[in-house]
Length: 122
Image 1 (cartoon, one colour):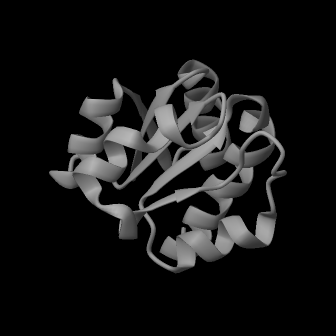
Image 2 (cartoon, one colour; image 1 turned 180 degrees about the horizontal axis):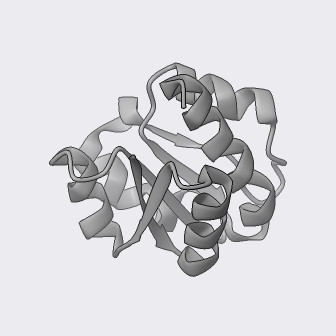
C-alpha cells in the first residue's frame, strides 16, 4: 500500500482522486503541511502532495524545509500547465514531494498517482 500525505487547498479532492486512481493500492492521508512533510520524513507516508494558488510557496514551503530541495518539485502553477511527461520524470527521478496549483488538481493528481504506481510496479 502506497501512502500519500495530502495537504493544502483542495486536500479533500486530492485525497479522493488519489484513492480513486490508486484503486485500492493507495491510501491518501489528509494532513497539515507540517504533518505531511514529517510523515514522509519519518516513513509514515511515501509521498507528499500539496496544493496552493501558485503550486509553490504554500504547497511546498514546509516540505522544502523538512525534506530538502532535492526531494521537492513544483508540477504546475499559474501560467504553467501540467506536463504528463514532466510529472512522470519527477517520480522516476526520486522526488517525494509534489506541489501543484489548486486549479490543476483534477488534471495532475491522476497522472501523478499513475506515475507513482508505474514506478512501484503496482
